[in-house]
Image (tube, rainbow, N blue to C red; front, side, top):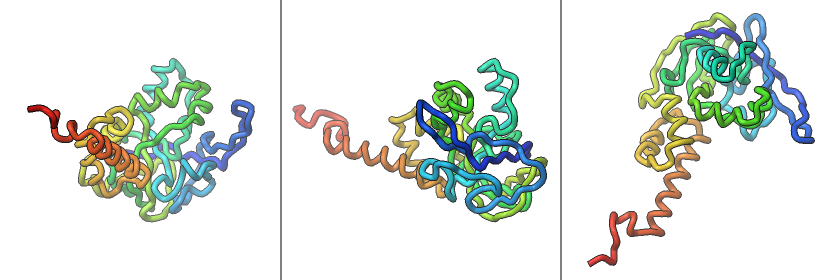
Amino acid sequence: MQILSVNVSMGRQIDYMGKKVRTGIFKEPVRGRVMLRRLNLDGDAQSDLINHGGIYKAVYAYSAEDYGFWQRELRRDRFTFGQFGENFTVREMLEDEIHIGDIFRVGSAKVEVTQPRVPCYKLGIKMELAGFPKMFLASGRVGFMLRVLEEGEVGAGDSFERLTVGPERVSIREINHLLHFDPDNLAGVRQVLLVKALSPGWRGSFEKRLAEASKQARDRPEIAGGGNLCAP
């Protein structure tokens, strides 16, 4: 497991549907070592701090193996590092093998996996394909967000040394599928809510799902009771 490229952007303004939109998705590789701080990398900025960034989404990692999948799927062969808006282009860190709560030493920093990436329309702009965010999400090849436990310098070529496996062993692929494509799996929701390292945003989404299910059960007691209460 290794960083192939460190990618940053201070953001730029683009035209989108007749409006000016600021985005940091057009990231480019940097040379040398970069300081990884609590909220982001030096030289990098999140333009939309409501949906991006913060302690639990300080940096975004995406696997080079997933690049190969999209090159075949989209029949493109000119991807460059940072193509998907990631800060770290990595290798041998696929979504089936990375878990919420995994802790890594990378360079002189220490980081923790907190959630999958949720794509927005800006990824479609970057890929010049409006429907790409939905394709990206459905593929399960979404990469993952990291929280910085210890600040330090990082650079291309640094190894990701796994110090701790997330104790609940919930993979990025599993939790991404549960949130977006398995709405009736309440048992799964209860299990992932036990994952201490899960980001507050994702935790809130799962808690909301349980609350809505509880409300529906109260409103329709025959469902909660497993049958028709008026039956003889």
